[in-house]
Length: 367
Image 1: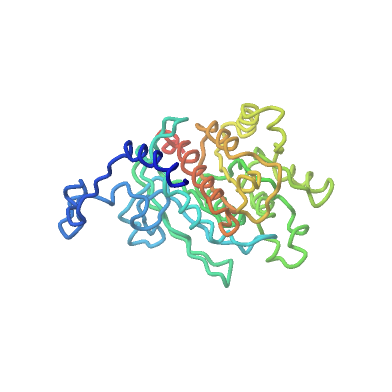
Image 2: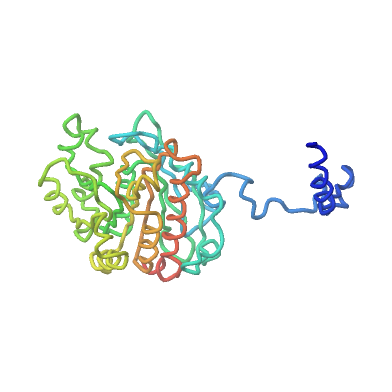
């Protein structure tokens, strides 16, 4: 009875089924496919996401720290990894940030739907210099080499892949040597201007240099201007009033995370531009400025942060500022989701926003 009732269904479906004809196994040519061999006629390398070295967005690799190699390859903008994380006060792992961000940049290509810019086809020569040589046995040791610019500008711009936020101190020292004091636009959930005597310095002088004190030290060394500001702050302070007073003394103004709800993206952008004026700018993005829902892979996550879209919109609107250096830091891939949520976001900030600020030659040749 069951078989009898099922028979009409079988007959009716078989009558409309699509006929699928498989080619013979050996007849590859007949199917439109081309066999690969020593006389390949198909280019499977150009445009591939999975060939060659894993550089940032498949940029050319130049060992910028080896003089005889860098001498013959001038560039305008360089990606440099800083695999360092022994200055953290919470979860480690940011030493693997540069590699994670490069993996997150595998699909970066084409023209931005928002800005109309394709940075890979702009006037600038962009290279990936790999990672700065560091030893995990002595955090004070790092190699230093001169850079090799093209004829378009006097000094190449360096975009740093962190690494914990302590690495920004080295970048600011380098920036100061070329351009003098800069206004720092600091995207973060924490102040990072803590006095070393308050954070780490009570243990040892060495411990006082960390990812929460580097901006205080930068102020003491005269590396930054009193026109700097934080964006996205929401973490608690260590001292009720002393930390804020010290932050003001270090030259910073604070835009808190919830200010976005009150004034919107345009209001945040106007406040940033008004603060830095026409001074030279260094932009530092700590990944924890984002809410942990959007960037879980960091050492000191703080709930209540920006969304990825909100931050991208703010950064995009800062085009035209005289930016002389930038970084994205505190990316610790071990804590990321299987979807690479954090590293994808970090990679897109770097290429879509940072480099687009220099889309016109005048931005880099004039400073």
